[in-house]
Length: 391
Ligand SMILES: Cc1cc2nc3c(=O)[nH]c(=O)nc-3n(C[C@H](O)[C@H](O)[C@H](O)COP(=O)(O)OP(=O)(O)OC[C@H]3O[C@@H](n4cnc5c(N)ncnc54)[C@H](O)[C@@H]3O)c2cc1C
Image (cartoon, rainbow, N blue to C red; front, side, top):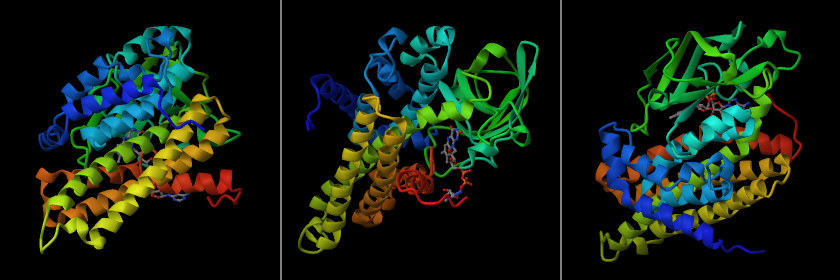
């Protein structure tokens, strides 16, 4: 078994580390305090072609895969970005992944080259206040009228919609009560923005304040029928195709963020002397950090295995088993690492200047989005271990 990176992969990691280093913790700290979108970082990401890493060459991408995207994600977060790239880069990729997988020839030819260059940003509008974990409960509805669809409903936590050129909107085109199966009747639309029927209001939130997440209101929002992505009524099954890459990338971001927090805490523990020796020499400080390090290493190996399986075209169910395991392990390890990074810093951990409190807040998101830890365990319990479904 060969665990070495190829020359191309090493170059991608080195470029990501370079950009992550250029936009280090102070940059993200200032963005968060000023609630300012990290514009310059995203310009750098576009320049490196990172939005096209997972897209084919004919679509304007570099023809690499999820493995390379995961390597870039981990390195961007680890080398200075913390959680910032983990959320922003991932959400910048979801639209392109959906269009690549489900767009028709015309949509792919028009949209993907712009997305690959980072010139077209596209968010995701899936969650509703009564439908987060339970996607099938979405109520937002698109009614066909001539060669248009008219959409009514609302979305929740749509991130960066205010600065997106489009959003992938997940809606019902058949009401739940009229569907033979609950998973039928859902469709995906690529809605160009702005649209007079789409308005939004920011949600004041716990972390990631350099990105705005919004409540979105759709009131007779008209979209051309050509904005349907894939087949009407099959949207839920289409979404399943992007779930594994999403889990792999969120795992990579969580691991990169936690490794950064652990490195900063290790440096601090080696220097900070409270009694007669650096605090890092006390096992109550050292062992939890070593334990978090070991768990992050195990999670990273699992994440790369899932990415490799995905790129090698293994069956989605087999990839799902490893991708869900990786997401679960990565986030548990990241929560532990960031918690110990805070404890190692003592009171300094509360000071924004030391940054660990920001990463501690940021990793909390990965417990919840884009999928909760409980749902990864439900997947493993039911689909991998064969236990009965509980809900
Ligand atoms: C900062 C941020 C940004 C986001 N950005 C976006 C975005 O851009 N687009 C978008 O569409 N969404 C976005 N989301 C929404 C996010 O994907 C959802 O919050 C997430 O999927 C969880 O859904 P929920 O909040 O409705 O939780 P709920 O479904 O209400 O669940 C609450 C808790 O109950 C648990 N639970 C529920 N059912 C079960 C069960 N059967 N078994 C075990 N446990 C269960 C869940 O795991 C969770 O812990 C964002 C969220 C945040 C916080």
